[in-house]
Length: 223
Image (cartoon, one colour):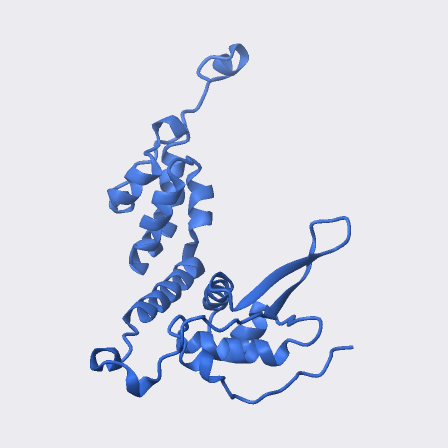
């Protein structure tokens, strides 16, 4: 039976509110995690947080990992006994105030009172949304497996997710034709060359299969 949440409303301690290491979104996450953290911990999944905050699961994962790295929460995975099957993830609120005194907002220098620049966060969210759109058309893993010449994956992945959606649509349309035109992988372009050169825009010629005579089939000629 699920335990009742230790509901604390939306109150955020002064130490968290003024902690310069936290973004506003991370503060709200911490408030929610603390309210769900009973004696055994918080068992909320990424799906729960995504639905609750109306954001993507990718964004949830980034925020959770950031809070773990900054030492505000601990995360552990519980596996089924004797197997590697994941049963659940447990989050524990473990914030320790910094040793240095938290500065009061009115005591900050004028330059510190400038509006918070959210450009970086906005760009990251835009990248995540674009990645989700690309994956809905043809994910990099799908491209990688179809191309089947697995050289330079990391570079290719970055290049792939920097392409425009129109390019991904074109790759999805033309890649099977290109693969068919180069059945021998040795003659297939390196995936890095394919992406950098925008070769999905090339005209592709698929040579028809040569018909073999009965004589050739009997004596294994023309294989």
